[in-house]
Amino acid sequence: MGYPVSADENGVNLKPEKMEKEKLYHCIFKNKAMLLFKDSQDVMNCYEIEEPDLVEQIKKCGNDDDLEKLFEDYLKGNT
Image (tube, rainbow, N blue to C red; front, side, top):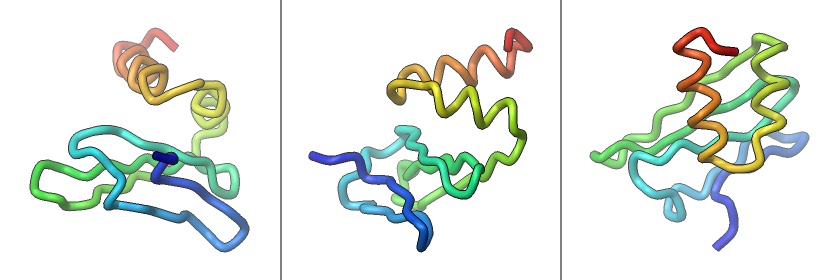
């Protein structure tokens, strides 16, 4: 199964049928980080991050577990 979120010059591409509920996904589009997840009621949630330093840190995340750790640290003020 491929990653359900991607971006190209036309925008962000989603395959919600491949998304697990309550799991955070991400992609980079036009120097912005797009964070997406499908909640327990199958509602799609999307957040856009424009802050350059945080976007660069997100780009370095190798997988979604690293991404979640980054946000945990960020919220604690450790980044």
